[in-house]
Image (cartoon, rainbow, N blue to C red; front, side, top):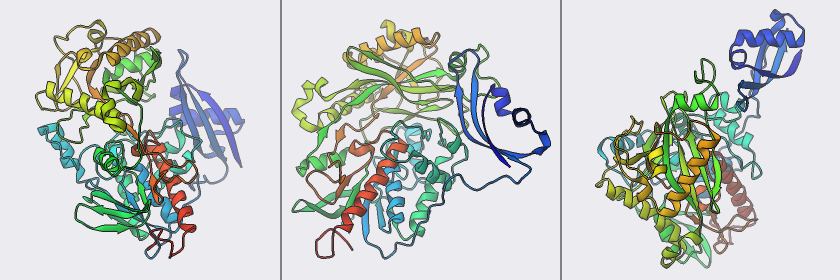
Length: 530
């Protein structure tokens, strides 16, 4: 017999298998030994009250073997070696999931990635932290897996109306992610685990007859008569076919190229601010309402902050419990920071982006740059931080209370940021319209969560890469660019996603749109079919 059970338990009971099994037996009024096993289907932590509770959905197997089959249907990937090809520019979440979906649909993806494979990227990223050397083609933003490859691997999203989140989680799980991502309300993979999952996805693409090319930068789009016929790379190689453009939010050269070609673009709002780093134990104490922190059973605590100041949102972004801050520049004359966490979220720090909404209309002084105005503003902030640091990746930093009070920090706490930090007036480095909103936002967050506003916390560097500063407009039905048929702007870089899962969902949507586009073509219609 199989029984489904909903439980609300203390952390000790929820995370201790023997105690959990005892509670299940009591709830079902059966003997302990009658329980062959159980499977946790869903798990969430409720820390709204002083007593933290864990909600569980459990499938119980009574006097019968435990069903160990996956909680989703296996996806079949056919051989597409000789199928019509589709060019996928970028091997981030959008590009990789677009490629897998193309294979499902019987089409051959040709993935062109400007950066290196996920393993080779490690050396270049280490050089950023240790030597301050930024390889403009291989860094935290560019390379296999995109900006998400060496991140916390957060898989929580609110974008649930555009596609199936469960499908995306199932694909990650089928390629090596842990069972927990199918269970937890806020799933994550971890920076130490995600690269292996990405490699498994690449192997599947190649096994099915697709192609993946690294250090293969697209330099030109081959457009004639308002139709894209393919792309050209730095080597001069031409790849023909419809194009899914999934370059990520930091591929500024692509935006410049599109603009030079007269392709219609739109400026898009972003968010600018800092990385805020607290001791993880302090966040645990605040979120779990205990001076002892999270204790033996609970995971490193997360938080989410949001308010509005003078008509603009001020909020936390990409919160990394038990994580560390990383240098995320993707080119010269830039200093940018981001955050990540290992799968165990085991460091003694927590960090999040703390950012202020910036809309195109806030930047009238950049109007001369037209549709690129928000990107130019972004570049200006990153260059300002770089120059303040004498051309290094050692980042400006300021204690949180000192920032709010407009004071210089005479010294700084220990940090997770490997290149190091130095005291600076972050409140002066940021534009005033951002600084004063952050200041008011922090004061409000401190009132909502006592202990959050503290000089134990540090503001580090500039957080500027929250999303794309450009939107590449596309038709809402066909997902093609509004003026160029066969061109499918996709994911974060095109302005249609904001994280790993939403980018993956958009990748699948674009693959479906390409399949529909090709189904309406014939070999004489110049749709790019090979």
